[in-house]
Image 1 (tube, rainbow, N blue to C red):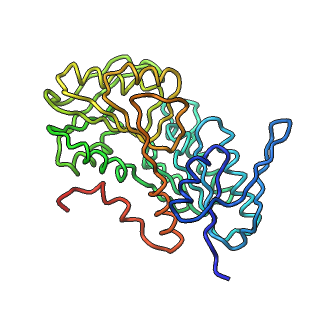
Image 2: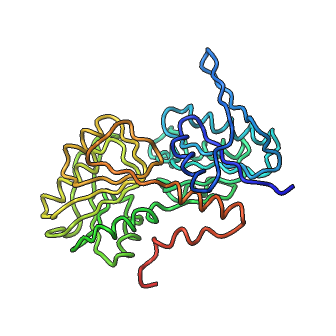
Image 3: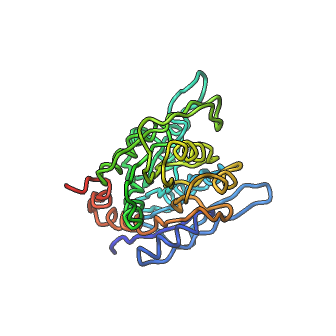
Amino acid sequence: MQPSVKIFSGTNSEYLASKIANAYGDKLGDINVQKFSDGEFQPVFQESIRGDYVFLVQSTFSPSDNLMELLMMIDAAKRASAGYITAVIPYFGFARQDRKDKPRVSIASKLVANLLTTAGADRVMTMDLHAPQIQGFFDIPVDHLDSSAIFIPYIERLNLENLTFASPDVGSTNRVREVASYFNAEMVICDKHRKRANEIASMTVIGDVANRNVVLIDDICDTAGTLSKSAAILKERGALSVRAFCTHPVLSGKAYENIENSELESMVVCDTIPLKQQCSKIEVLSTAELFAIAIRNTFENKSIHSLFIHSQRKNK
């Protein structure tokens, strides 16, 4: 009998996994996560997966139970004789801890990569890692999807004149440069200095934004302090409007309040993490179709190169 594709979801990612399965043309597989009174849990597959291509959808946002649940799902699938196990992680948590930026700290993203491999994953599928180099932490294939395939068509529909793209910090420069190149547009950099984590001491703009419609692009929005500060200083420098596009809406602390009270016209995010509350300025775009195509191409041993077409220049 030929192996089939079976898509399963972790507890807190079913909102997205169900859309991915629907876009693929199937339904979610039957899995039950049993809860025990002491806080432990146990994923149990309720159907045979022997020899199948198993895709386990789980973003590893807070709390850390999401990561542990994914590891246990992978282990259970391996012990149930799944033919090929892919961990579909729309938001890869701990990605900001990708190096030793001070003495005596963990490189948590490398640790997570080791855990996923040890648990039994054959492949990882994710989107917009905080640092693309994290792919090198894995000794298994990594499909690193790009949200520009979702954001660029949306930006095109806005029909903005005098368009300029902005990086909210130096770390996002390459990401923003690729999108700006696609539109043959200018880009500027908001250079920030932090006193401590989640607290900005100062910020300057490198480049001219006077009489321009500015689009900020970033991978993660946590407290929204950087985006709010960037929008304010860009408006001070003469920008006609400022919009933000951010893949992963972590949105902790006073993030929703910061966004609502900011100079941003709007903020567009992906559904890699569910919103904790509604905000009039936030619009959510789905990643389901992109992941569904990547899953199909993985199963059929086809290239996923076509999913990155929007990150290329228009004139190519």
